Length: 265
Image 1 (cartoon, one colour):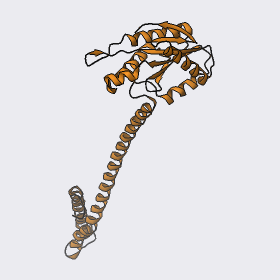
Image 2: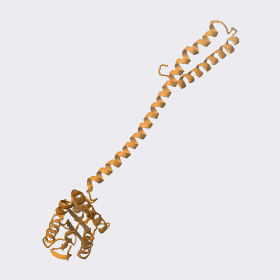
Image 3: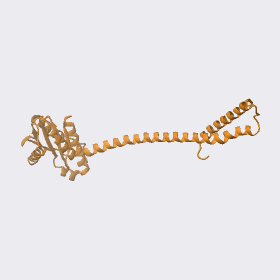
């Protein structure tokens, strides 16, 4: 009734009854002490006044208290929901940030993120190497087996690179079938060993489509730096070596302008 709950009405009724009992008790005790008789209008006034005053006052007070408690509980619930939403948004933000850095097909860094990392690594005093690996005859793979198989080939190259590089190295896919690896702390000997391990692993991979083995290999161009380097110049030089490897017959490595490995596919 009037928005008052049963719980509030019950509390108000109890308080009113206690008020009536207290008022009547006072009249029955006090009036005789004053020489009067506790009957007539005075007695009924002791009953009526608590009913008129205590009933609405207590009902209003309990109703307000219940409303405040309900609102407090609602605010607490909303606060918990906001914390949950904030946690979900934080996870989503972290996921979006990660997705914005990663090539979704291969799991390597995307072009922008790789070159940003390369710029940051350019000031290190330690030796390093930059390798560019390009899938050989990739258009032929797409034309012969379809683009889905071509995607599988790129994923396989990405997995091979991830298994080849060390924990301090980073790599990415910067073009359709072009991958770049930065090898931190690698001199020419180590860079050649990693490049050759990658070339051999890709050439020996087992990618089958329609019952046929998909021929897969990479050509690799690489440049080494002894310390601080110019990222643009180092990349351009490695890219030139990559095209030397392509022109020399593919499935081979050209490092620092010199052919370093040849295998007949």
